[in-house]
Length: 136
Image (cartoon, rainbow, N blue to C red; front, side):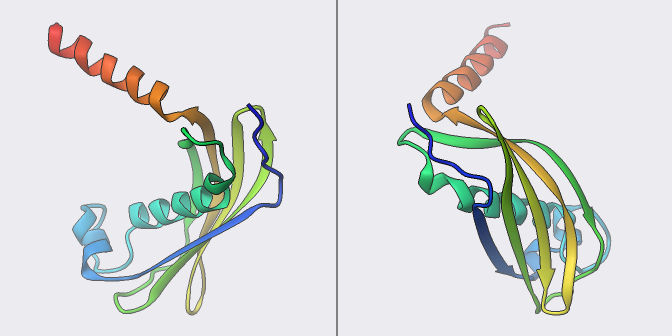
């Protein structure tokens, strides 16, 4: 199976900041600003955008590690945007540089590590875990 990924590939995602993706809604804080978990999800989506179209059918990626800082608040009504750059490939391990912005500048940055997986194999293993739990 040939996987055609190269360092330097980029992905982007954006979303409006609404009441639904604030820290209050996520339960991650008590202020109506863009939630850190929402920013993390947006960063992961940008990583997926960078590589998924280049993976063979039936393959995907899963996130395994994040090292990020959320450095500025974004209020409801603005737009959050994430950018990801694939900076390292080690077999099935992918490392991305991630950044997030609003209209005023950077709001977060860091790195995100993902692994290439066979979706069917991955789901089979996850479902087997659930079946073992139910049988206990």
